[in-house]
Image 1: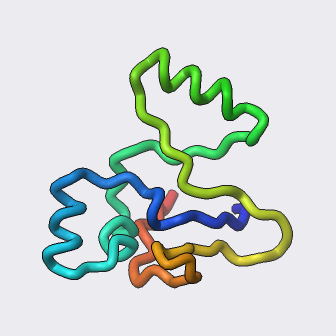
Image 2: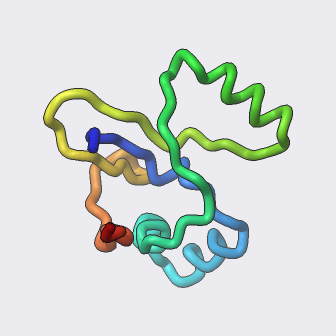
Length: 97
């Protein structure tokens, strides 16, 4: 698995969830890192971004860039809304095959 960096503010959530996060004073990353995936997460070469955008427009499927793969032996990073590195309390669901 390659290390990655992703930005909390770019993770899409519904209006209802956004309101709940604000009302309950929750951290968005704690809600979105519990393992329930509602969108497909994939990686792609940055050179292909125009192709991906065109496919998104042609199909009406919203595609959101939330981060990038980073090189080296770095650990994966999460950057919060204040541009500070944070750690998610929940590590998501680990599939066992």
